[in-house]
Length: 436
Image (tube, rainbow, N blue to C red):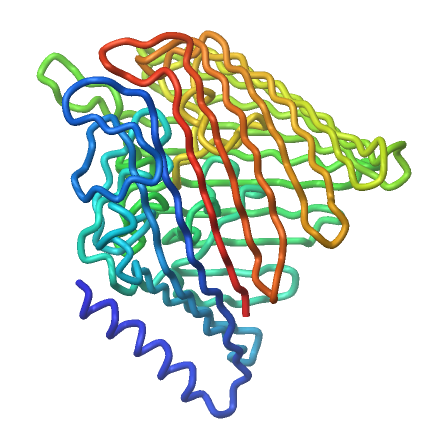
């Protein structure tokens, strides 16, 4: 697999570089990513210390992970309104697994145990992680106000809220998809998509598998309409038809595969004329299985933010999800489209809960931006460890010598402890990212 990926990557470079009569450009990024996780889990072989570099995987305990990554984009104008795009991603460790960390955040041949509490990639194990992946390869054609894009590509959350590329890890994940975008109608963007495969943002960028971590065995069909005709308002409505979805099992322990319809709507209100930079949003969605034995999952959300003084922005959000069969979760990753999504609370908020969130961001002149967020989740039943959950996120973002830095601290608390599970957990994340 590694040799094939390198050959494909080299072929795309040669093909692009060889187009003497075609305009092309090269861009990319290089990233150093470090994260350590610790908690108070009890029992045999459980280690709760942050910053541990023990190479033995601690079940239920800590994990310290790191990556060094380089990503190159090769984009070309092929004339006659054809464009070409490709992306090669390299993920390594700089040898840090020898005495500094015991895992990786991402790789191309890694495995992942999908920790039930955070699911943020902190359980990916080191396993031949120095490798390449061909993460983008597409051709696009524009005819009038319509663009057709075929191949491996990113999908934005703003237009595909239930199947989108996530940017919290070293690199974003991508999809094998066909995308059609039309802007003929005034103030309106119409997007149609056929999405078949996705790579794993938490571990393996080289392997493309079924959506939803294997939940959607057939493809997903999507239609999105985004309209800005109303003053100060952007309305986005999306429909998905998901084929052959397997979740529950029958008496013979076989997956019950069904079609599923999913709906999502978002209303964003913002304008420079509003006092104190006021912004507001409403969202609602439904996942509706065709199997009558499965319950619909419904979600609603509201958010508001304002800038009461220069450089200070305050915000609040509320979301509620009922007890349906399927969770409100990104089919292309691990996060949710909910307004109350924090660094690591996706499992708690994606099903059967009510969540409140407060957020403050302060711009410290040329020194960067400090962000503090706090969320409380009530009546969550998706995880077995607890019903109620709280998370505090503290982040500081700044730029120095052309490099974007992020430092973040996350504190998670559950209301009780059972079966040696943790009732609190800490995450520390440091990222340096240079875009060129």
